[in-house]
Length: 359
Ligand code: NAD
Ligand code: UDP
Image 1 (cartoon, rainbow, N blue to C red):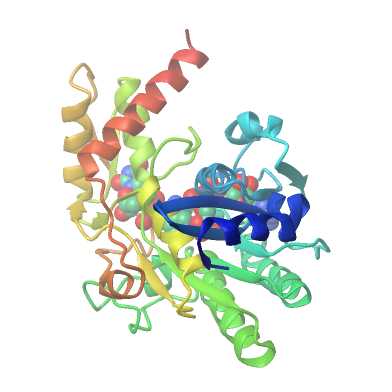
Image 2: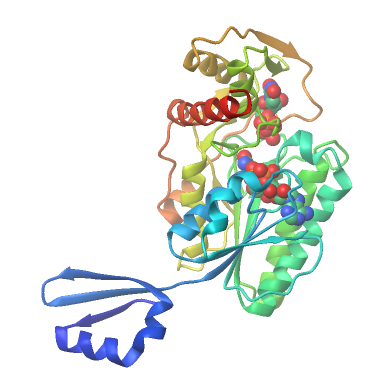
């Protein structure tokens, strides 16, 4: 809601007429110019974040709380623990619900961010049937919840919907190249089916959806045992263990720092142009995995680690880079944080974490 009111008298009358209780549900009153009072009344919302204890989810909960929203964080701790949300538990606007998204849920909410799903290949391949259920049943349950509440819902989809892509960089119009029988399919096809469900709920039931396709994202609050490449290389370098490059290291990825993702994600949810996506959110600067390993070693000069080469996992995409023209145009969004700067912050985080584990 956005209301402009001119003149002090009107301002006073307005405050009296809306009353204290009403105001308590709204935030931000800004005086922009003398004699002209601008009210930007933004409703405080009750927002559900599934997978809220995970890497991305915990950053998102923090940001939504900082904006004074009420946040309900739902998680089954499959790939996370209480650690990431420990500090948030004392905030009266924060509630944690131990729940599995494959089980239906009834709760009153205004917005839903659906993030629940293991994202690291080693974790989503551990119990592949569960991974499919989390993506598909989780999407159905959260879309039903959105439908019943007339709530807006955002799906955290992935660049994996493009599989091992033949189009480079990847645009949202590309349909992808996924092996539906492979080890990665439980995740890739699960996420593809979830996108289908989002668009069908939108067409059939008019659910207000948003779909983002996230490209490789890293940063503080990744789990130490996450297994994805950035946290692996940093932890290996800090522990003076060999950096494990899979294959020759000439496959590419484009690494996005977490703060850039959270900015894009919340912009997408709150865009008022009814732009539903799908939209790529990623950093368009592409690196080989070997370049990443060398950069991590450069940033941790005291490390005695060497690089070792291990077999390339099945169906490992050879190249990945987002085309972000759509996000730039529709959301006025582009990543701001360079890989080197994001890595420095992530290295600091893991340094402290390892120090606390082995003081
Ligand atoms: P993560 O593993 O750190 O977080 C996932 C969270 O979901 C964990 O807290 C886990 O316990 C929870 N979870 C898993 N299954 C659940 C279930 N059945 N019920 C309830 N909770 C469940 O991963 P992340 O990197 O934070 O990813 C978050 C979301 O973003 C995922 O949906 C992932 O597919 C998507 N994504 C992330 C990236 C990335 O690079 N980080 C890239 C593409 C897409
Ligand atoms: N990788 C690697 N060493 C590791 C972990 C990953 O060389 O210890 C490679 C992996 O084979 C892939 C890339 O790094 O080519 C990114 O892997 P990650 O698991 O981070 O994410 P993906 O993009 O494959 O889902």
